[in-house]
Image (cartoon, rainbow, N blue to C red; front, side):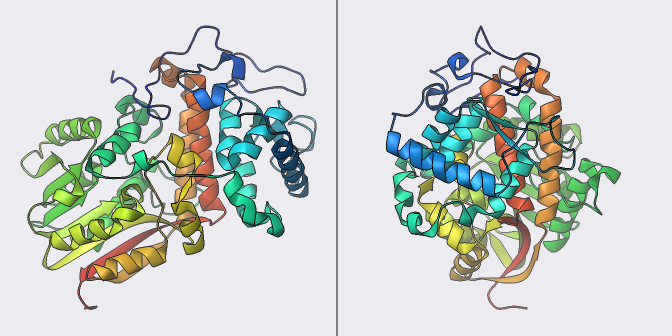
Length: 445
């Protein structure tokens, strides 16, 4: 079993502390799910900002209480708990500690909102549903006259999260080296950690593995990968794309900064008898060597950081042989939202992907063009990512015992559930999209 690492910001998770509060749901209106935690049981060494409330600020707490309460009521997210209302009613948010909830939001905005969930101060009978409603109305949650005060409840991104060569290794380690066993719990057997492409909805009529293979095959087709193709993959994952490309007869070089991923990808490639066709390198994309007929990079640009997007696209072009093709899969958000998020420390950057930033289509187009690349094809399919995330979240929730046995405590589990639901809501509300792009060198041909 691999050892968990970096489950909370810059710290390692430990086994669940004695006195944990996992247990059967209570029958009162304050009923909490089996995953419930209570703040007094949270390990302050591991989760300092979850275990302790931020400093009291009566004015901020009162304003947050008024604004949040008004928004939740207007969006019909407050009301009786499940079992006390008609089944047709929409998702609901249930507060267990309203003062702590408002205090965290008043001090830390959306980070506080997520930390309050991690602390067990609120729950929902449909977490993704609540977050989707909020994402749909994100620009309306704060009255226009107060939006100029946004700086009071958001903080700047830490300079330590910059994706320098050393910083990029640390940031990748923080997420991808958590534990191969953890990812295998909720991913499908291909271990693909990016959006699948489904043949049709609802997805229950198709396996997630089949949908992931469809995604990979589309990218390989887009890049023109066939027998004898020299292929560079930037961002190995656990090796499924490299395996599938090598099976086509391509000669694959795949790069990663994750030691855990590299080790398992090599094992899988060797087990498939394809070690002679696919090489896994622990290497930064900025240090790419050689020229390739095709380059594929799946949801890697989001981890690069805006400061290094020029270097990323320059590396792509430098690696491309004359007449070559680049196939990218990337999550995108609106340009205005991206500019606002670029300098903001968010829940995702604090707990999940330090140093990351989702680009806009405009940013991708601008930086790729500046590197001498032309976008030839651009196809979006955000609904497929929402469905992928729903399946991941369901599998994760169904495997709580296995996750606990790997050493991940209930606070981590609530953080991960919130991350998956939060991401799903982004796609369901169309705040986020995912796109496959074909880039070539120079002018359109």
